[in-house]
Image 1: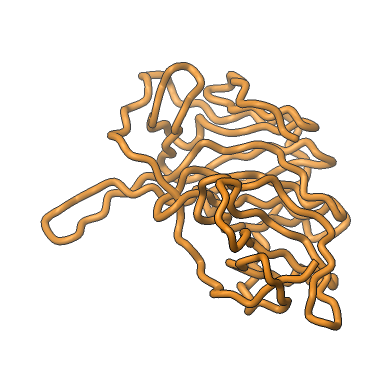
Image 2: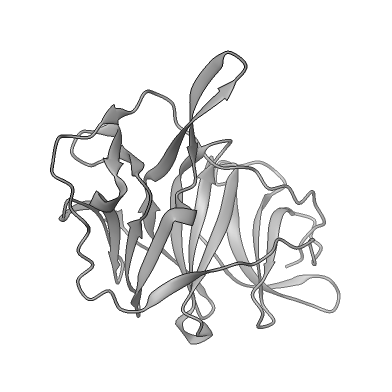
Length: 242
């Protein structure tokens, strides 16, 4: 498979409308990570120019993983609702790409902008939080790059809410929670927690929509394909990883 030259545009973060509500009056509690395992740290990978050519893909961003493989966020030139994916590949001498793996699609999202987490040992792979949406953040698709597989862990239905003022108007703007996410875990079992004052949960799985919670009360757990939202220590099922 080959990969085409394109406009390497980074589309900023994802969205949802409506006025957030305050969370229920529950005493704050931190997320119990149990045995947290290894702490993962952010791996700062710069966005590179496209390094492969293709007639069918529009490449948004490209990253060098440092071991001869690259990751790109790309979509088909002919629009379809599956939209953007992450592709793991080797560049070939003829400027085509040997595709090793690809992620689940982003469907209607205009971006799949990744933040990478590492233990410092590439044998453990990389945890990837991929910000989804359009201008604002819809939340994060979470992947585990394990060898030559891009495993889907689940979706973090969470964003950071800011208030922005332009001229005489003040409006809500939802940004990526990835810079405020801490990752712990080993061998496919991961815990995700958040720092800062508060996060907005788009669906708290108890009937609440766009609810603001103190950051320390919200987290996610992934245990070998089982994905759970955790609020005040209660696990709430949010679908299964693939």
